[in-house]
Length: 313
Image 1 (spheres, rainbow, N blue to C red):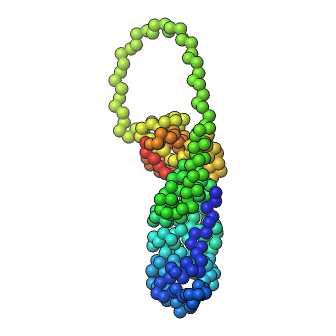
Image 2: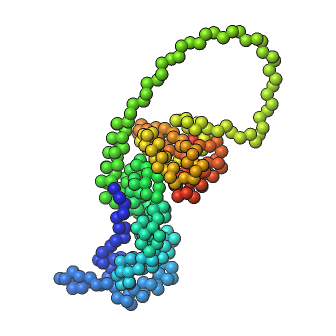
Image 3: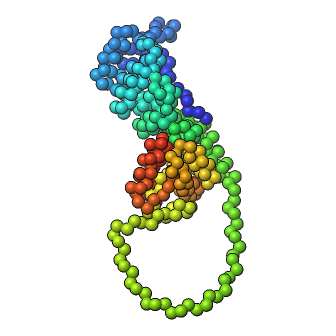
């Protein structure tokens, strides 16, 4: 399941239908043929785009990308999409993400494509939601996370992007299968034989009162091997998986991206029971008693192109 479909790859009919101020140029109805916009119409569109109109900036980028009314130029397309994307136009954010996804007119970067897709998805674009899910499923530019991918495919369906239905059904089936075939837990070890009674201890000296704790003493470090997060811990989450083995395998793949000291630190994997009673294993690149330390770890991960978030349990 790859996400490299062409967003915004519209036909001449769709482009002309999108243009305003009389840019729809239909030939006689019997032929049902369309011709590209005239140079005067393109000039008017360019004027509005240069004045800062986000929609017209997006349309100029679209004409450059498709080579309709303007010479095909992906670099120019990226520049005009970028102007509109920075103004929050979701269609432009989606199209700019696609250029980074494919390396057209800009350096190829899944990480940058993912960021623009996320922004477009936040603006309600269903196709962008689908691409976010696909990148999470494939692990392109972000740690692979099939549970999160399924959630994004559901959002895309709700936003009316119908191709997401087949993707959701596939991933949901994979998650259900992985859950049903998970290895059963190992039986607990037999109880140890009781130890012989210890000799009576000599009377202890009177205990001295303990000094009051220092107000600036650090909180104890969380147990990195605990499966259940202790209350108050700050975990640096990098993925969520339907079983522990998948989380461990994802960490092994992730180590290639990490600085040596972070890779050697090992993962922290917490088990979480969701509202629907399903269990997931959350993969974390460390857990801390102090929030600032967790944020610093997440910042280092993001500098290594690893997406993360700090979760307070």
